[in-house]
Image 1 (tube, one colour):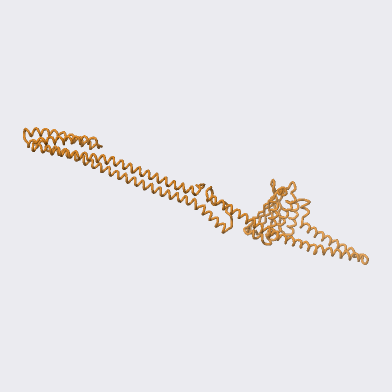
Image 2: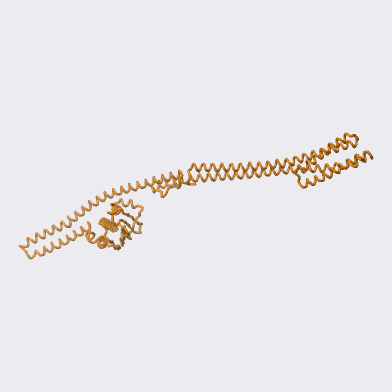
Amino acid sequence: MRDLSISARLIGGFLAVVALIAITGFIALRGIDEVSTHYQEGFGAYSERALVASGLEVALLEQVRAQKNYLLRGEPRYLDEAARWGERVQAARAKLGKQRLTPSDGALLAQLDASLEDLAQAYRAQIEIRRTEGIAAADRVMRGKAAAALVIVEQLVRSAEEQAAEEEAQALRALRRTRMITAGLIAAIGLLALGLGMALSLSITRPLGRLKSQLDTIAAEGAPPVEPAAQGRNEIAEIARAFHELVQKASLLRDMEARARRMDALSSRTARAQEEERGRIARELHDSIGQALTAIGLNLSIARRDLERRPEAVGQHLEEAKRLIGETLDDLHRLVFDLRPPALDNLGLIAALEAYARDFSARSGVKVDLQADELEPRLAFEAETTLYRICQEALTNIAKHARARNVTVHLGQSESRLNLTISDDGVGFDTGGAADSRAAPEGVGLLNMERRAEELGGRFQIESAPQQGTTIRVSISRDPRGDHE
């Protein structure tokens, strides 16, 4: 569902609700129609039977009345009237036999037939007895016969009325069931529509909520989101992807601007450091080598003067000049080594690092454990210089700030890359403030190391925590010139 557009979701939900309403209406109408049809058939049949039975009862009463009139008056017209009502009784009986009957109704109908037959026989006998024996004797023959038939007819009428009432009650019960089913379906549709509405609402509001949460996080922390707030192909997902791309680009631009500011600060501090280094070298040349050369020249002048006056003192002045020359050579050697150690050009990176590590341990008292793989063939000039200067800068930082006792330097290689790791057991620092720390004067060393690695397309990483020591990892290509070409 998350891949559907919002308009498609709305239309789909609307059509689903409409379809359910239509299905419910169809079920309700069909149920009502079936109840109505069944009620009409059943109620009509039993009502018609009740009417037929009532007609039979009326015809029977009229027949008995005509027979009574003939018995009392003896007029032939009453015989004709009784015959006509008798035909109506038989017609009603025949029609009643064609109605829907229950087994008990069938038994009553059989009793009615017997009673009507008994009544007809009694009527024929009554006519004969009246001529021969008189009215009183004829009345005794008919007594009770008509009443028995009427009782049966009344039972048939009541049975038909009761069954019609039962049909009506069943129809009402079925109608109530249909209404209950319809109400249940409507409630189910309402709940389903509510569920669909909530699902649709959540499918829209949840991504928007995640998007707002990302905005709040960016506003509070400035950290870009890892992934878009919504996935899929709908409008919200497209907005989330566009927002994510925009934030990523803004974050990249911000990082580039921060890097540029750091590089500007580094360039300015590097220039100042270079000027300070030039000043230091100038002071070294002036204070140490210049003074030593002045002293050497003075000793040689004194030796030349004493060569004529006091030849025995010349040797002492020459020895002093020789000592000063040796010290001056040592100072020159140290100064040249600081600028670029000859071992780096003559013996390679590992030998230069070993020499520097020994000298560093002797000057600082920090133990350095150098572990290095064999580097064959020899590395490119740029790679050797960069790794040496990074290691030199790292050890200088350790001596100034780390208060460490032990340092491990590991230089390894893979097929195409060189990996330098420098670890110490010093006081460490919070890497969360690494960017701020690099802006401080003591942080120029970190910036220098990072810049040197990045100039060769390498990677520079710092891992540290307070009282947990510091680890610097550098990875560069074996042949930086080939990479840049």
